[in-house]
Length: 420
Image (tube, rainbow, N blue to C red; front, side, top):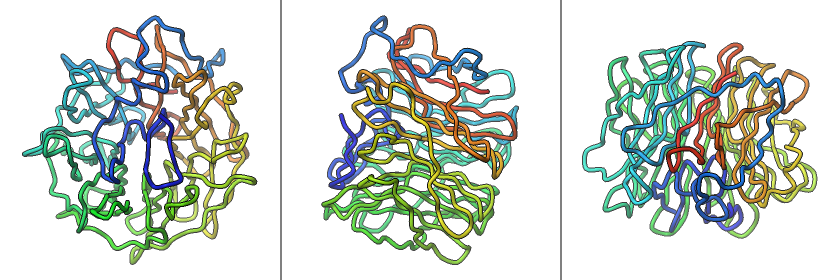
């Protein structure tokens, strides 16, 4: 189950995109956790050999117990947004079993415990899932994802808003000509200013990136440049209502994937050039975090190089590569190590979550930027851990929270959250 960046057909492995979507016929089907369970070698039963993510003695990361819905055997948290050290919202999906239809999942951290917030069920949907979330305040969060329809044969964009008491479905347009669509990330500077990104497939078999904007009253599709016929957007960050950056990758359908970034200046979106590491034929970006229009960090993976983790920094004029470490046993992974999520608490402080597959089993790691370099941090694993990954990261001041999913416990797959 390798991720392919060359032909425009996205096949998923143990990365952030596991928690997102496959693209059959360049469309989207919502199987938000099956790939995590399957890994690269088939379903692994509890008690099987444990993967070994970096676990340095003295690690400051601590696992926070997260609830899983009653009767749900398969659970995952795909993204998290923290407005303070005592307030975080995480979103994802759950299902009774691998054959069951998924439902959107939302949980809230109050400084002591995580509690489930019932998500709204879109009318007419046979399944739903959240892939991204952003909270402008404790009582103003927006989550995005997709819903399955027609017996799971197609999907549509999903957006829901939290008003402090409940989640409500928002009408969000599907791009003209889309046969399948999904939104993967969202960034809100206020309840009246949110930007969401994703992509959709059309009848011609092409994949197109999409950006949508909430103005406090309605969502609308924003015109964006697409330099290649195949474009994906997976991350977005807005430092102000008039300054946003979106990242992903693009392909002409015949060569390797190339990193893709666009910036919004309040009037229009413009493509930004992303450098490649020396010797890399291609790369892909998974996430981005901006603390100002002149300070953004994006992370992802570089293809076919000995050091695949990728981080690039925007200084207001151009993107520059930042050297990043890799886990010591990354060479044992059949898929390249990837930095899936990133969050910057300041221009000089960023934290990223990553994953790879030593011995074919998914494992995770964390890296931190101190203004000079990136360094690996120790991360704990739950008791009985077999494999898993971290998908989302959110930092506020000195505290960071990472979320994902893992196998090896009482459930076939359980949600996962940890904080430092």
